[in-house]
Image 1 (spheres, helix red, strand yellow):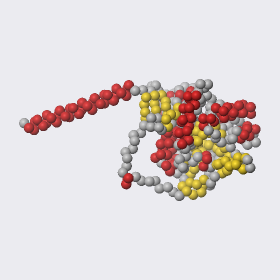
Image 2 (tube, rainbow, N blue to C red):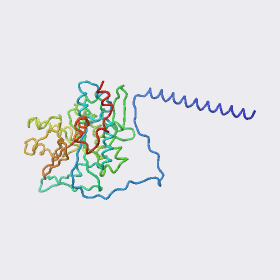
Image 3 (cartoon, rainbow, N blue to C red):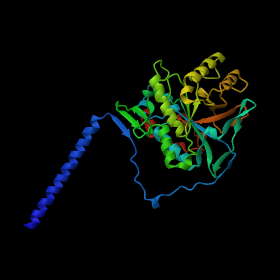
Image 4 (cartoon, rainbow, N blue to C red):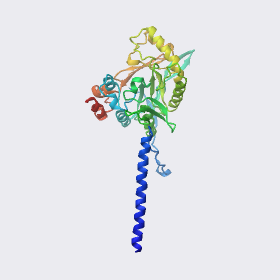
Length: 380
């Protein structure tokens, strides 16, 4: 009889616990449906005991005098079903963008191949000489065996067309005080994530792999101005609030090792436009964008459309304080004098992944990087 009573008590307890679990699951589902905003955060790692912590041994820095690689991306495709959907923008997205999955695999490969991120300011500094600013090449010091890499991101302005075609909408500070992206998924739900754009992804990767970054270096953000910056519509007449929002994010980005470059105000092809058009465009960038980013001496040619140092357009850009000019090319090219530096960047995009694999095979194996989602929607 006593045994029977104990069994009955145990059964009651088990049913009670099962009921609580079921209720909790139902409540969670209701709450999930009730909220539209989604925060994609990684769970905080469990604290380790002191004796369990392992420090990554840092190799002694040695002088590096070899080639300097520079690669560039555009904002990531987060929603392939919107990017590769067969509309008028689909071909451009297929050629000039990579997906989140592709970017993550590329970064992993770069790390395994011993590349290390550096800043442009690790290569050059400006010094005053008889009242004139001169460009001085610094001696790059790297851990033995590491290869320097500059990474830049073009058009991280989030133009209106991007919002309809699978990119995120803007960069923000999330509730944890970290840089995150804001977007809306294809169902219209608001998404705040640290896993949907290059900036937070690279911040996270270098946090867990500090030997992938020299002194906290991340990359260069190349900004236009005609549709604002970083998703903030600073180009509009009533843009005071937008400008303050952009300045807050920019200050945070600089703290985290990001640099900024001019990508022209209106994304005009420098080689083909007239000198007067270039002057208006460059002046407007200095007037509207530089107060947000601070001064920069880096000019990244829109479309890779470059001009030579004897061109009046080049000389005018020099008068505005630009000294480092970046174009597009398949190899690690860098030429410099005391007046200027010219550098080529390798484009990392769908075109390179699918049709020009030979120019990126020193960085990664395209066949292992390509995202099946790209082809899934292209074939429909």
